[in-house]
Image 1 (spheres, rainbow, N blue to C red):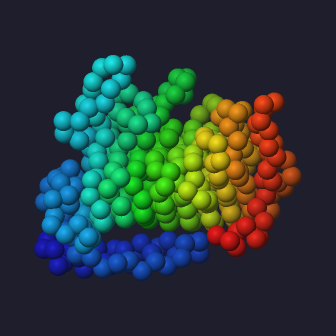
Image 2 (cartoon, one colour):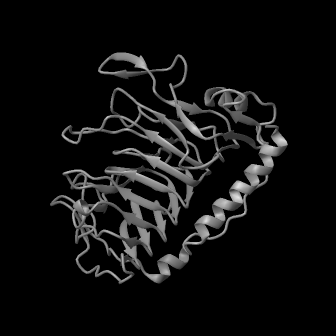
Amino acid sequence: MNRYILFSLLSMLLCSVVTLHNKGGRIHPIVEEMIDPSFIVPDDGDLTEAFKAAREREDTAARFMIFIRKGEYFLKGDSGSTIQVEGINYPSPITTLRSPNVTIIGEKWDSVVLWNKPEHEGIDITATLLIAPESHNTQIKNLTIKNAYEYNERNFAGRAVALQDKSTGTLCRYVKLLSHQDTYYSDNNFGVFLFEDCEIHGTVDFICGGGDVTFKRCRLVLEDRTKADCITAPGVPLKNGYVFRDCVIDGPESQARRYSLGRPWKNGSRCQYINTRMNILPRKDGWTVMRDYILPARMAEYGSVDVSGVSLDLSERRKEWGNDSAHINISPILTEKEIAAW
């Protein structure tokens, strides 16, 4: 298939994706940028070769588009890179993008899967895809990123990152992220990131890190386990931290009234849910702690409803944070003035 025909089909595909999602009345129409693919996976090579071509192009200010055909793609990690575990070096399972202004777009989000399977757990040594600091203004669209680490909930930790982002200006649209603990890691306290119409799965702190991340119309899916899940672990914010707008929380009934909306990872952390539909309800106090000495700046919500659209009673949400040494009281309910300021 020549590139002209592929480009035409890709344009029609993007329009069909928008139409399909728009029938549900929840996702707004999106006008996609018309870009002729710069590199096609697997026609022109694998994803590592695509990243190499993007890095070596002459004009890095111009957008470089990588189109990925349907298929499951096992990512072996950066050639020659290693990770260290208990003083021993192992081949790195991480595949890294090291170029700005790159778009990675799949043919179909459920049929294009980028995955790896680390042998060791760890927030900084497991990412399926790592966006390096120089890779600003990355766009990822219409695909799935999966970390297939064999999670064992009996262990103290099972951190396995699907997407780790050290850059800024990243846009994810129609992207599905699959793992258990630390699925998405915003690893730049000065970064600004945007997720639109995405789906993120996990168990423990599966959306974690610093910077400002806005999630619009996203589906947050709790995975089943015998212990309680926790959606977020926000770190140091740039300004607003994590902001969820018009999102949906879904999951098994086993997590109903057990899971938490989040727990602060760093002092001054922020996490806010606005107009969220909670198909299964969280614990009544809503939030929990990682360490009792960590004091957040804001952990709050506004306009939360249940699966039937009925407003939730937020009167029992956690207000007090800290211990005997340091203690603060924060309103768990956002005001309309606060929301308008965003």
